[in-house]
Image (cartoon, rainbow, N blue to C red):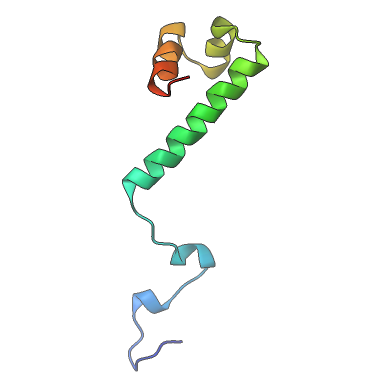
Length: 74
């Protein structure tokens, strides 16, 4: 199971997902912001540009949705 005589915690993997060690918060934040931006775009498109209906579906106030639109330059 390992290259040395002593078995260590890093030598044990229970699934291939565990071998992925990306702990960068910036990377996770970028992915989250991309998901948020895409979700906002889809909901606005679904409601034909009606910000009030889109905000209600997203569980946001109109003001909060406008702030996010500004944040993502939409």
